Image (cartoon, rainbow, N blue to C red; front, side, top):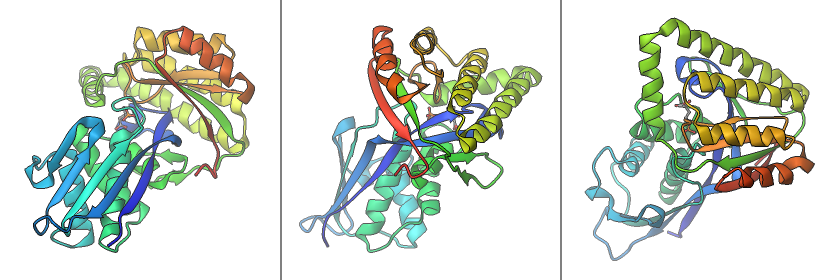
Amino acid sequence: MPAITTTAPGKVILLGEHAVVYDRPALAVPVTQVYAKATVSPDISAPQGRVWINAKDIGLSTNLADLPADHPFAVTASSVLETLGITRFPALKLQIISTIPIAAGLGSGAAVAVAMARALAAFVGRSLTPAQASAIAYRTDQCYHGTPSGIDNTVVAYAHPIFFKRSQPFELLPIASPFTLVIANSGPARPTGEVVADVRAAWQKDPARLDALFDQIAEIANQARIELETGNIPALGSLMTRNHALLQQLTVSSPVLDRLVDAAIHAGAFGAKLSGGGRGGNMLALVAPEQAQPVADALTQAGAVNILITQVSASHV
Ligand code: PMV
C-alpha cells in the first residue's frame, strides 16, 4: 500500500456566527492558504491494527489505542471505521500537520478531521463523500464544544462557499464576483466552547433580547446572500460591519477585535467584523483588491499578529 496524503482547507465565517447555533442562517467560505494535511503510510513492522499518530504541531506522538475515547483523533478514527463498516485499520502511521492556527476561528479542528478521515479511508481503498467527511468532522467538532452548529465541518468538507442553516439542507453559494478578504488574528483566542456556553447562559437568562439579536443577524445573512449573488461587494461590507455591532451586543467581541475592525474601516475596507467564536481569534475585513495591502498594514499597526489575504470565488478550490 502506498502512502496517501490528503488535505483540507481552513475556513472563515463571513456572517452569522453564534446566531447560527440558534438556527439562524450563516455564510462561510474556505480559506485555501491554510490547510491541514494527513499522510498515512503502512507500518509493516508494527503489530496488527496499530495506528501510530504523529501530530508535531500539538506535540503528540502516540498509539491511537492509548488516547481517551473522546479525544478528537480517536473520535475521527472510530467514526471512519463505523462509516466504512470495518472493525480496524491495517497497521499504519498517520502524520498530521496543519498550518491553520488553532482556536482562532479558522476551522482547524474540522480541517484536521476531514483530512485525517479521507486519508484513513483512502488507505483502505475507500473514499468518503463530502457528506460523509462532513458528518465525521461534525462528531469530532463535538469534542471541542458540545453544540456545534455544523457550519465548520460543512464548509471544510465541501471546500466551497456555503449558506448554512441548521434545520435545512445547506446550499453551495453562487458568487457573482470574486472578493478579497484580509484576515487578521487579534492574539490569544478564547476556546469557542466557552464563548458559546456564555452566549447560551445569556440566552437562557433573557431569551427575548438574545432572540431579537439573532433575528437581526439572520436578516443580515439573508441580505448578504443576495449581495453575493449579485456581486454587490461594498454592500456586503456594510452588512459585515453591522454584524460586528450585533456581535458586540452579544458580548463576544473584545477590545482588540474592536480596535482591528475600526482600523480596517479607517484604512478603506468596505466593512469588517470578528469571525468565529470571538473574544479573541480572527477578524475579517472585506476590501477592494488594491486596498488589501494598506488595510493589512493598518491592521499590523493596530496590533494584529498574523495576517492572511485571500480571494474568494465560486470556483475557489
Ligand atoms: O470559532 P469557530 O470558527 O469554530 O466558529 C464558531 C462558530 C459559532 O457559531 C460560534 C459556533 C458554531 O458551532 O457555529
